[in-house]
Image (cartoon, rainbow, N blue to C red):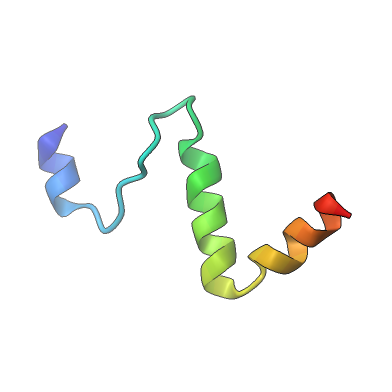
Length: 44
């Protein structure tokens, strides 16, 4: 709902079931500086 969106600190570009949680997890990992290191393990 628009009321919730107005008060949210972050709104994902994806809908629930379409990658919203993944987007949020990636954001957190990037903010912590862990994203590149963790992804390198999967891409090796």
